[in-house]
Structures are given as C-alpha cells and as structure tokens.
Image (cartoon, rainbow, N blue to C red; front, side, top):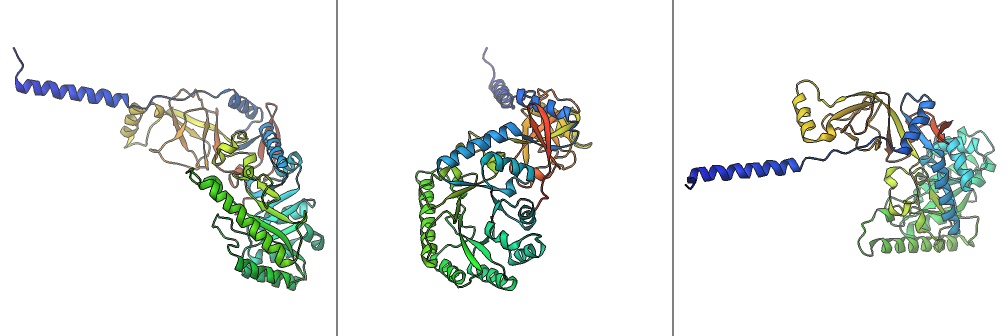
Length: 430
C-alpha cells in the first residue's frame, strides 16, 4: 500500500529536517587546545622560581641574542651599519645588551625624555631623531641637558622635514649660539611626510648652507610600506625600485647643493624592521634601522623575518577557572555557546588583560566575544584541553613592542631555564 500524498510530504519534510540537523551538527567547531608545550612549560617553571605572581613581560635572553646575532650577520654582509630603534626597545639594559651583541652604538630616538636620558647616560652613543620634533622640544632639550652641549653636537642629529622647520631650527641655533647637525627626512614612497620634491628640498638646503651653525648630517628615508604592499605581480619590486631612485636623487641633490663629497661622516639612513633585509648595500643608504624585529612581536610575522623567533611574552596567572558563563539574566546564551562551541566550555579569568597581545600558550585559548574585554580580569575561553588550574600561567604574545613592553614594570629576563635578571624600562612616551 502506497503512502498517501500527505504522508509522503511529512516523510520528506522529516528527512530534510534530519539532514539539516546532521549538517548543522557537523558544522559545530571542533574542540582544540593542548597544555603548555615544552618551551612554555620551561618558561612557566622559571617564573614560578621567581615568584612572578602578577603580569610580567618576559624576555627570552637566548632568543634575543640569537636574533641579534642573525640581524648583525645580515646587516654586516650587506656592508651597511646598524642603528637600533630605541622606542621599540625601551629599556636601557635591553639597549645595552643589544648594542654589545650587535656591535653598534647608533641609536634612533623618537621623543624628548628618551633623548635626554640617552644623551646624558650613554655618552658614547650616536643619536638620530626618528621623527621631526617641534622646535620647542629642541629648546627644552638644551635647557635641560646637563653636559657638554658643544661635544654633544657631533653625535646628535635633529630631523628636519620641511623648509619651515629648517627655519625654526636655524633661529634656535642662532638664539642659543649652538652648533646643530641636521638630518633631512625624505619621502621615498610612504607618504607620511618628509621632503617629497626637489624644490622643497632645495629651499631647505639653501637655508642650511647659509647658516654656519647648522651642519648637514645626511638623509633618512623610511620605507616600511614596502613590506605592506599587496603581493600583486610587480607591485613591490616597482615600489622598491622607486624608493631607491628617489633616495639616490635626493642624496645627489643634497651633496651637489652643499658642495660636499660623499663619505662615511654622513648618515644615509633607511629601512626599519620590516624592510632592513631589502637593503644589500647597492643603494644610496649606508645604514639601516632595526628595533622590533629583535624581540619579534606578532606584527612582524613576515616571511622575510621567519628566521627570527619571538623573544618577548606577557606572562599572567589564572585567577579563576570555571565553566564559562555570562552574567545572571543572560546565562542561557552562554549555555548555548558552550553546547555549540566546545572551545567555550571553560572560562579563565586572568590577572589584567586588554593588552595589545594575543594568547600564545596554552594552545586554543581566545578572548570571549560574548563576555567582552577587561583590563582588570579578562576572560579567555577554551575547551579544557589546556589543563589549566588557578595560579597556572598563561602566555600572550605582544603585537608590537613599543609601549607594550613598558606596561609591566621591570622586564623579567629568563636564561638557562631561570629568571636571571630584571631590566628597568624607560617611561612610556609617545
């Protein structure tokens, strides 16, 4: 006996509903996660021995020095000099260790407080401003500097980006009777400022040439855009060739206008962590700047930097661990979330949070988009495969080094499986 049309429709609907349910069930996220691997387990044990009961910034000294050795080797092979970027390595002991490891005394500085500190406490360093400061900052520097300002002039380069700023610095030099070396920022394609055309550069060079108290020190052409361009055929190669051509043209113009011959006394600065590897010594630059790559936050996970390893992590303890639940009144949503996504089964409230960082270990942890963020006790959710308990350590990887490295007090330096040193940090500054 054949089923009636109505019964056939019911059977078909039931079959479709069952198939949809099965398909939906198959789309559930698979549980992920694992306990700390050997590397992070060793870091956690080192922190336990140091009684690190609050969030700390951990520096892996062995990785740091390995990164420094590799960068030094790469830069030396190109015949260029290396300049360390202080804002990305904001700690005097950290800079000291890296200057020793890389064999350089050249530093790039981006703000007045760091400039004062380095000029006074590290008198052997060669200092180049990494951004043009308002002339008022330069005035404050000379008023506050306690040392031989005349001797300092030979190792300090102020950055100039417009004819107007050149005129302001010329007026300051005259007022103070102070010799000042100036480096000119040029736009090699980033479009973030600096001299972009020959006419503006010619005006600035004329002002410079007419003022005996101002001395030409070189050029700076930052080319970080080369690493961020889309990987379309020919785009990056074209932009790199353009950057080299512009730099070479501006360099030739400056030397000719000032009646100078090229030599090692000039600073032809280029690059940054994302692009230092692109400079092979065949262009106009004679030095490259590197900072963040030496500790390698996640923003620098670029193919060309793959040989460098992350050397800085935020370590913070677990304060609370329980089944993930939203506040009373909407707890049903979290029950549904736990049922649907087994990676939201447990919630771990950590000490602090909302940093520019992402969970690194144990695997499979993530911030809760349902609960939201907190700088006091952020919740991270996981499947439970992480095997975390209260007081265990969670590691996060910073996305950048400047500012983030300074949020936790002294850097906790780990070497040989132990917390070996504590390095003070410089105050956070824009």
